[in-house]
Amino acid sequence: MRRRRLRPAIIALAVIASLLAPGTVTAPAAVAAPTGGKKVIANLFEWNWPSVAAECTGTLGPKGYGYVQVSPPQEHVRGNQWWVAYQPVSYRIESRKGTREQFRSMVSTCQAAGVKVIVDAVVNHMSGQTNGGTGWAGSSYQHHVYPGIYQAQDFHYCGRNGTNDIVNYLDRYEVQNCELVNLADLKTGSEYVRSRLAAYLNDLLSLGVDGFRLDASKHMPAADIADILRRLNRPAYVVQEVIHGAGEPIRPEEYTGNGDVHEFRYGKDLARVFRSERLAYLRNFGEGWGHLPSSVASVFVDNHDTQRDDGGVLTYRDRGIYALANAFMLAWPYGSPTVMSSYTITNRDAGPPSDGGNRTLNTTCYSGWECEHRWPVIANMVGFRNATEGAGVSNWYDNGYQHIAFSRTGRGFITINDEDFPITGRSYQTGLPAGRYCDVIHGTFTNGTCTGPIITVDANGWFAATVPAHDAIALHQNARLP
Image (cartoon, rainbow, N blue to C red; front, side, top):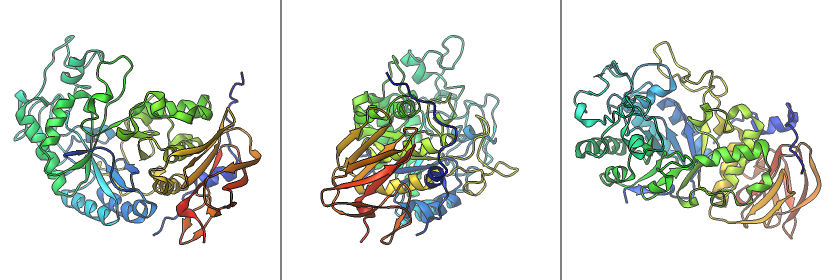
């Protein structure tokens, strides 16, 4: 059996340039699956509100992103670590990312650019600071007392194994009633807590938001979440964070009645294939691998949690191979994709670039901020996803190893070569109408012109081309030249 060769340390300069070079970009209560023709989500992790607004107008809207996911907006504990945003002390919309009015303005600006807004909502718990303190906007708090909001009776105290923390993930009671790393666990089964959480979400809806990512959903019974969502004043897109664990009693499938669910297996499986297995195995990727049904799966190559773990996923540090994995995700018709946009991670706890008072600085891409959503190959493949929405897969080809190709029937075509050598002397059946198409992996299509290679598809739907090592070619119906 052939063994995969070690990946060369340096990929061809032309490929690196095409994949990574920054380009100037111009121009019921829960709803499962983002609606409309533009479903790709950009996760602008820890961006401040003025920067998100500018990015919606300058990049996300023009490139066809349907949604932007923003980090938790409520008042949180003080500090410069990334996780302080996940330790709320009140539901005031005032954080290191900006004020309530800046948040409202951001939502309005993004929607005017055709981009809907999803809020990362922390509803399972409050802070993990045992000694209490003063929050970002001046609210005082103790670990289990938040004046005017929650008192001691509004929290769980499981007292298992001499601690309130979760110890055994095989015990459903512990996972949903004990504290996650000392975070004060809300009693989401109580009428008062449910009504207070719904009030927070309704406040965000009143500011115009379109949906919610519910953080730590696994640590709340699905029925508790359902009750909270029933109290919303209008429909909203909902995606829930439920991490699959082998042998664990709490399953992601329990939550699909509330909305979409993050499919954490997707990124780990995709990373393993690209790093050490064969792209040919991707022929039935998704449900065929035991993942959630496509209609309720929210997928990503990496997110703000997994990119900090033990290396089980691809991240911006993997550069070219990361871009190719994102290209596959955006081309393959499984789930609703989210593109991660990171800042440079210097250590596991590192927060975003900030001033001396830990207020998040305006984003400057490629200077402390990685901005993967702007990488040309990723940004251009968002248009591919939009152009091929609803089309099935046909014309699958693989060489048994690292070279694959497939059509999105009648609308798009992609071939990916992750071999250590170029693929030459091959023709590809695209299923596309005859014409001249912009290769959106290497060029941007704007106003009928292409900044990169042009591929000519003949009357029978074929074209011939050389695909360099660790590279790709992608065509779609909305990037066809006159």
